[in-house]
Structures are given as C-alpha cells and as structure tokens.
Length: 65
Length: 468
Image 1: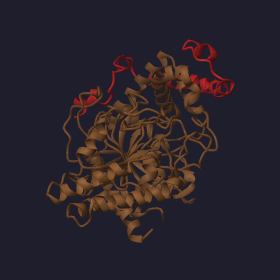
Image 2: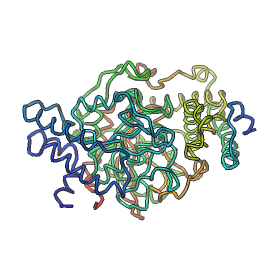
Image 3: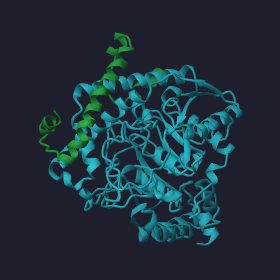
C-alpha cells in the first residue's frame, strides 16, 4: 500500500525509508478513526458548517468580538 | 570573558534599549561584545550558520550616529538579533544540503521591518532542516547545543535563534513555529517564546513548512522583550494571503497591570493524564502562583493528545509534502533521512483525511473561542509533557518518535491560530527547564502579555542565564 501510494507521486522509497513509513502509515489509519469519532460528537448541523477555509481564526473574528 | 561583558551579553532588551536611548552605551560597543562572544562560543554552540561581521558593524556605527543626532527609532534601535535561516536574507540554506548555494534576492518582510525599527542583524541562525528535520551528529550541519548543557540540543526547530540567546550571542532571535518550533526551544533554554495570532506577522519571504500552520515570532529573554520584537514585525502585508488587516496595538499597553480577578482556563484534558510528573509538579506551582496573584483558576474542556496529534501532524506533513515533493523526487538524497521520510508520510495522507482534520480543527478553534468569550480571559497549559531538551541525536530519529511519548502541547494553538507565549517557570528535579503557555483570544496579544508578565515578574527565572 505504501509503495503504491508513493508510486502515484513517482517516488521510490528506500528499504530504510519503508521501514519507517509502514508503521507510520498504520498510525495514520488509527488517527483517521480518532478524527471520525471527534466529528461524531457534534450535531450534523454543526458539522455541515465545516470546513471553513483558511486563515482559520480570522474568519471568526467578528463572531467572537 | 570579563564579567561585565557577560552581564551585558545577557541583558534584556528592555534594559539595554534604555541605555542605548540615553547614550549610556553605544550600539557599536554592544555589537562588538556580541561578535566577540560569537567568535568564542559559536564553535561550541553552533547557533549561527552565517555571521555578518562587517555589515553589522557598519549598521551599528550608523545606529550610533543616528541616535547621537537625536533620531532614536525605538526600543529595537541598536539591538543585535539573529534571524532563523529560513527567513530570506542573503544566503538562506534552510539547514539543508539541497540549498547550500541559494542566495535571496531581497530581505523578507519581517527582516525589512526589523531593520526599519533599527535592529542590527548579526547573522543567520541554525534550524532543523526546512524547520522540521532534526539535525543529528550524522547530519551535514552540526546540531545546536544548549548553553545550559553542551551534551544536549537546544530544542527546535528554531534551534539557532534560541541557542544564540541562551549563550548571550543575541538579544533576541526570530524563529518560526508550525507545531511548537519557537515555544519548545524556549522551554528548553528557559526563555520566552512567542507565536502571535495567525495573520499578525507577515510570512512573505519565509520558507514555508505548512501554509496554514506557520507563524513567525521571536525567542527572547523576557515577556516584554518578546512584545517589543513583535511590535517591530507585526502588521498587515498584502503580499501574504493570510495576513490580517487589523490594527496593531501597543503590545505593552497592559504589561504591568495586576491580574486580580482575571480568569485563567486550564486545558487540563490535554495534559493531566499525559504530562510527566516531574514537569507537572513544576507547572502546578506556576498555577498556584497565579492563584496567589489573585487570578481565578477554572478548567476548560478540550481535546486530548490523540486528537491533537491526529489533527496537527498529518496536516503539517501533507502541506510540507505539497511544498517538497518535486525536490524529494529529484534530489531526495540531499535531505536528512527523517525530513525525507516526513515528506513521504505526507504523501500518504488522503484528501479525505485532510478535510476531516480541517473540520476537527475548526471544531477545536470554535470551542476555545467560545471558552475565551464566556468562561475565561486566557488559557494555560504546560508547553510540553516530557522533559527536555534531549541529548544531541547520534543519528536521524526517523518517524517513530511521533506517537511515542511525544506529548507536546504547543500545536493546539498552531491549528487554532490563537496567540500563545511560553513562559519559563523553573527547573524540574533533574535540573531541566520547564515552561508553560498562556494563550488568548485572536489578536488579543495585549492580554496574553499582561498575564504572562504578571507571573514572570513575581519570580526570577527570567534573570537566570547559563554561566557562559
């Protein structure tokens, strides 16, 4: 999976790089679940407002002044 | 080195600028002191890549003449500083073998502003490669050493600017912060590290790491010094699409007001379970100090470390991958191994993941903004949950240090954009520096400085420096 994804970018990783990337990719998949769970705690209406484009804080200036 | 020269080298900008304004001391004398220390100490500390010996002496003489003629520009006039080597100014390597020959055609906006304010630029300071690839003993450039303990690194990625200030080789240094690269070295070195609100300081001409997370800012000895430097670099820039068209206040306006009755919101959900007990013990004393100063301490619900890491790091690496992918493809061998691997990792982040992270990021930002509107005036938490700085790395640490005892609490304000400052609060039982963060509403740096200064002035940590 990691090799195929990098190939999409014409990147060939060394064995040493892959030894780091494979567990890192597994960690990324776990993080994906963390994010999905975060969003589940919000109402659908709130979720539909996101994402605001950047810069993130500036969009909210007026709302919180 | 004479004691008086050492004391001069470790002076605050606040004190030194008054001596320069009244012509009690000349910028020429100050700059000579800095250059002598750099010549002596930089071979041990490795904080500077390039030192502008001749140019900075010419600038110092010009400053001396201007001040003598009554044209004093303000608190940065005649103050020698260092500039992180990702800021465009002369030769700019970003700490990478891949950019050893790059010479900037003009100064970046922040450097121009500092020069306009009269600051004297001593040189370009060391950085983790492209502001995140940790330098090891196997890297082509030497890691920066902490003046407190030469066997340890100075933290990063703004290692050189922090290392120079700690060693008395600059009065402040400009850094950049994408996940904590100003506040973390500041904690390691018992300094103040500042990241203002996203959009407050122009990033034009500073090599990007992540467009939506990058914040330029200073490392300095005191809260007031960091406010003075921010005053010099803040302001709208139409050339930076993220720059905010908002007024620039006097950042020192509330600096010495007391904080009785102010509400400090602890982000305990983020650190209570993950923070090293030795660090937490020192931090909790700072919380108690705030209580004794008359502040009301409240708790503000927020995310934990897994959520913070899930939002911050993939966002950062995906942005970095978009910036570096062409170079990695064509000359990846010129990058430090862990820089290259981080970029490759960024290419594994799907667009759907990135958007999920953006939604969660907005959620955290909204929650903190709501708390700062209803429940508290500022937020407080430790800078990091682990002891630091680490020993100088023998070799590239690879990717796996992320997610394994890497409880750093700084990134939350990179992805929400709130202004945040690291304030030193002492040493843990192993003698390693500890610090905490104060964050405030967007563009309310004035309140952040007020609260940070109140603690600082109630203790003496800001007066301590390494015996070097």
